[in-house]
Length: 417
Ligand code: EPU
Image (tube, rainbow, N blue to C red; front, side):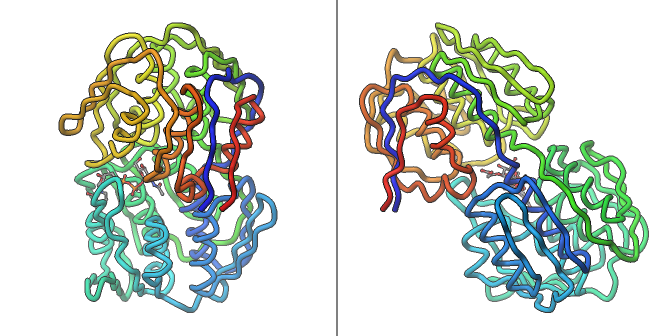
């Protein structure tokens, strides 16, 4: 497996462009199953999770191609209702084909995704939503089997805010008969981006981006061309790296509005942040100040930025309290940061981070996507060399992150297996 080697101590400087958002691209690619004909999506990030999705859509009978950052998906040949274990286990977000398959084929057989490194991650709310829309759900042999004669609009209240749950039910409801109302829906920009694409396909969705979404079912959808929104988590990761290295970095082609919580916390940590149109300039200052964070559904501080922010707090002046409220096991990066000299104490879902003068480079192991980014960030400010192993996770969700850091002056390289 590839490794990433980081020599710490360089100040990041320069300009960098962010890629399209993985978590917007995944549901949007799945939404192409809802209509016949060629959909074209641009600004799609080149990632392992995108390849896995295209493999899954092809398996279901869609014609897919990717050239550069442009993807075409034509589901006219959709003829298979089964998402098998081998494809789903590679990527949990494969569950996003469940809603479209039931809407289009009136049946679906999708492997249960199971837990992952960051938590149990059940899909009960996806299944409950589909049941309320009129599907019969059966769980057997590790698969969800859903069938219906016709989906019908319903009022659905989500007990917890779920991003892919909201997306799955929204995709099922666009072809249901009548009106669906989703309450306590996820407000993440990726949900709004999916709704925008569905509306361009001819769906009738109002309120996406707020906790109440109203969907008027339509008979059919038509193919579209659409661009994927910028990746707010990649943006936040680069911003944090700039603050961490006391650098001066301008991030282009992003959407600052999607990053209000992160910008607010980085400013409190002492970074100077200037926003202009679609670009954000971050100038890191000394010393970095300790700031408490609590992860929350959007517009709160994103759980997908918690690990990266923890690195910043590891070298800040003072003590910060980091509370993780979305996933029950998202502190797996802590033990690796401790091996690099960070002073972190975890109690339940809180981590008390006492800033230290220096981190020290070490061989470390990435255990999930955002933990990989966190360890690379730690490497950027460590003495000596950090070797990040199991880069596989990073490649699932960050497009050429090490190349972007190189461009900003970091001493970082990938060593091919
Ligand atoms: N939950 C349930 N039942 C459900 C669904 C969710 O109990 O049916 C719980 C989860 O276990 C979790 C909480 O609700 O404790 C929130 O989970 P959510 O469903 O919102 O997460 P997700 O949709 O599976 C997406 C992103 C994640 C991101 C979370 C939270 C995609 C493809 N994935 O996951 O992204 O962390 O929302 O914002 O959009 C990542 O990119 O690294 C990543 C993990």
